[in-house]
Amino acid sequence: METVVSGIRPTGKLHLGNYFGAVKNFLKMQKEYNCYFFIADYHSLTTHPTPGDLHGNVKQVLAEYLACGLDPEAATIYIQSDVPEVAELTLLMNMNAYLGELERTTSFKDKARKQPENVNAGLLTYPVLMAADILIHRAAKVPVGKDQEQNLEMTRKFAGRFNRIYNQEYFNIPQSFNYGEELVKIPGLDGSGKMGKSEGNGLYLADDEKTIRKKVMKAVTDQGPTEPNSVMPEPVRNLYTLLEVVSTPDTVEYFTEKFNSCEIRYGDLKKQLAEDIVKFNAPLRERILDISADAAYLQKVVNMGKEKAQASAAKTVKEVREIIGFKPF
Image 1 (cartoon, one colour):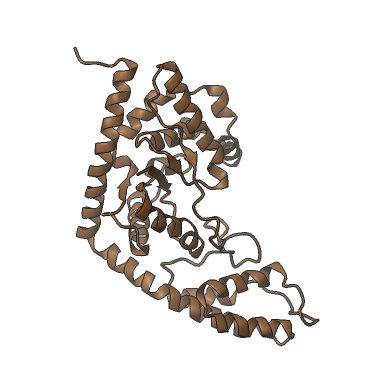
Image 2 (image 1 turned 60 degrees about the vertical axis):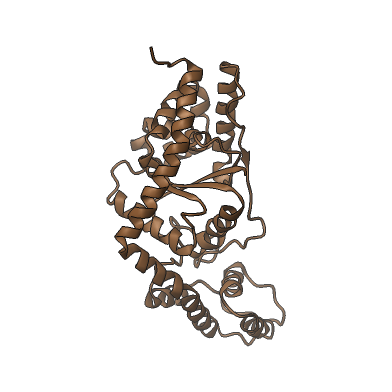
């Protein structure tokens, strides 16, 4: 069974875009591959070196992914900082990563421009840490978004370079893995683009009913169609996309007919959409709250993941050390 590795940044609550994107992918992958899903708390320090509540963020994202269906029996779910071998492999891989190639990465240049007062060494060597996360489990496949494709290419480069330097075919050359081409891209409520944390346009799985209704009722629309069968502007199309993933087909058909006949009342559409999102979200939110309150279960999951991840990581680091030449007297 091929190994898949993917990281989860503890940077906030999951929104519907996450659920219909990464989470849906993970739920499929854990049934078909040897999956390692880790909460990337080391990575979060590159942009937030003094987080307000790192432990709380880790706990939140862990509870939410478990509530969505990640299965600690089927996949290895662990916290990155619980596996010290990751840090050691990063150090060893850093010795064969060169300043020029790290400085040229798009992610480094973008972050350095956005946070000029915090251009730290961890930001520069982010691709090496990412490579260590992947290579430490000898992964064959890595699901990545567009923004991480270059960093995965760096991982491939580091793995191949290690193999050449030490004349060993040790590391797999991991392949990009797009499991979810058929998945719907969930738009935000601001009229354009996708749902995201930084955009402030998201509907979160942990949102209560009042918050969901308030957000949906403020969603951007237009003045309404003036001719039958008009093309939907993007903000309106976005609302219909949300409707399609949470509402019944007859509800979608009803409001589509209203739009095409120029009889649409966006207030009615938003009210229906809000109620359907509340209905869809309620069981997820209830599970999130239950799991968040179950300290014993969370500890059990973390311990189980740590044990399985460390077994894999320790084997890799031991073998890498021997290949490099670190041997006991």
